[in-house]
Image 1 (cartoon, helix red, strand yellow):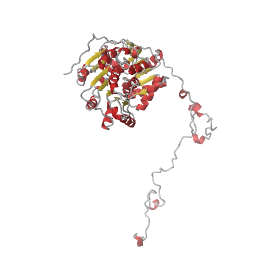
Image 2 (cartoon, helix red, strand yellow):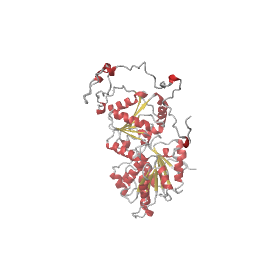
Image 3 (cartoon, helix red, strand yellow):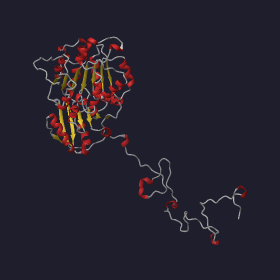
Image 4 (tube, one colour):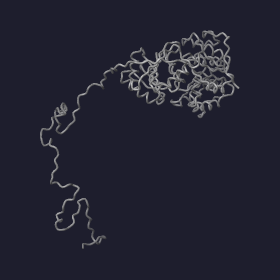
Length: 488
């Protein structure tokens, strides 16, 4: 039975990347990215990974977990690197799975930067994009593959990728990967992998159930924790405001204007709510954009790039953006809706305060959020002070669409005096209301008129003959020679 054991603490830990037994080409790439000192998770995990051990790494978001597993994998694959153009010389040797497209793209971006001075090839496949370019790239040969489970299964069924030579498997954000929604796909993928491999699990949150479940995939794993489990970063200021449901949007607008937050991610719980809040913020003069699962991948990437450039102040997003978004020096996040899962709170506020920078996390809680808020306090072992906001009237910027319009005059036959200005002459057409009093008289029915639905009296009615309704067509007379009846 596999057991999780902590590493020994008497081994001296390196402090800088230059102290690690890494190739000069990898160290050069790390230096190009401005990395010098190791974070705690990197200092503990990298030496163990260089020894080929299976690891479960738990650390707060924004502490460099991607580099912690990417750099030792690149180091161990360098002896197998080839400059040949033959796809056979570039089989998939390392597989990195991520639960969301944004996280997969973020891991791929960092991985490609770490390996840019080496012959190792990297690729990334995820849903929402055309499979044809991905198939062409995979057929040309890939050494390190980053993927989401669903799209990877699509390529496995299409036989465009072979996982028979994989030596390293990484489950990033393992708590979500092992969730009930991803577990069937994950089990199918693991069935394509060799039995002898190194498996790494990294995440910011590890529940006891997830730890027991993950042990079935690892061989004598080492548990590396650099902080208390499910802890939040100490450099992130956390505020909770108690608000009424109808005052949430006004409170959000006032907080965005009162606090120095040039950029902020606003988290909501539903896709419909993201769209509604985005439109409301735009009406209040705040540049906002929505990001959720109903958006195509191209739209999500375009929105994310615009947010990184500073063209958007508020990125209204669902939990699809709670993992994997690495935005440099993001000043703060706002939980417009309290998350359903307490673990998601840790990931949400982890988008700010990354790489040692300070950040602000604001949560708007209503009376019905009491239970969810209590679960968060129990998870992070911290009691929140409930703050209040004195709302001020929102002064919306005047837009051209909001400018007062002149009353639209509709043509009418005789306008009553109560309409006032509406009875004025048409300014463009130069027309005036009719002056003939006959058109102003109310309708008076003629007492002698006979209703149209009653048939008129025939001229022969006085002779005792039956009158025929004008709506009844008389029969046409046909000669007897043609089959008709003769006149009687």
